Image 1 (cartoon, one colour):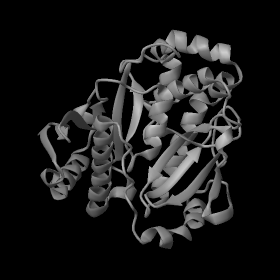
Image 2 (cartoon, rainbow, N blue to C red):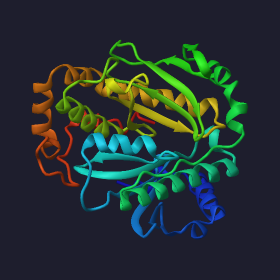
Image 3 (cartoon, rainbow, N blue to C red):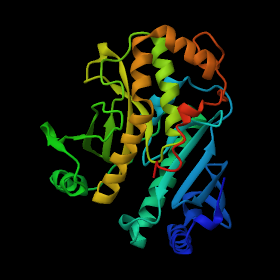
Image 4 (cartoon, rainbow, N blue to C red):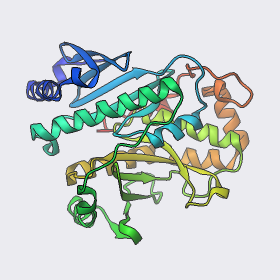
Length: 326
């Protein structure tokens, strides 16, 4: 739901200026504004963008046709540029990108324009990949990647979170999870920017496919509620024989602020708090995983013909995080 009154005029005015300055039509994007809602067409696909609760959210339906299983969406999310992500929300698969608007980190109009365009480009690439079934190409970063490598410890120190420096410029940050469980997020520089990721399972990937499917479905549902966070899959410690781990991830530009880093760590903490215990249970108990899919996501069960619509997640899955995911 869009609450027009919740979006400050200053935020809308700056966003409108950023959209105009970005020249959407030059990027194959058309948009018609109505209040705090824009009807958008990207790569021939229709979607919306809304400004509400200090967030600019681009939202498109998934492509009709032969979809992927939940684990396939995680693999696709791992390849997306910008902050585009597939999520499960309200019983549907959605493609989204989210940009915070009224934050100290984006008061500069040029930076806001860059963040908006980064999201639009990410969604455009994702829509192109979704329509042809091919993985999107990575968007290369600038020379700022190398320059910012040495600033990661400084950024982490500024946000006040406990961290330790690892090899090759990687930093591990202790997350703040309410249930007392111990989670560490890895902060790393990549050609596309800064990637911050955490494994909610905290162990080796589950050996059973049913557990992997259930974990992926649960994480996709959580990321439908938690801003900035996507659910991805990646190789387990670089060892192919161990399979793929499901991770929560936030992607930031190569040059970012301590405010954005703090928001990212908070969002990852919320995501782990919402489903970390459940992810570990699903990994350890294939029968529980099967029961979860039968109740919440029956079309994701092995041997079931997949469709774009998924069963609506439970209130626990969705986490009711709208009030504190920001």
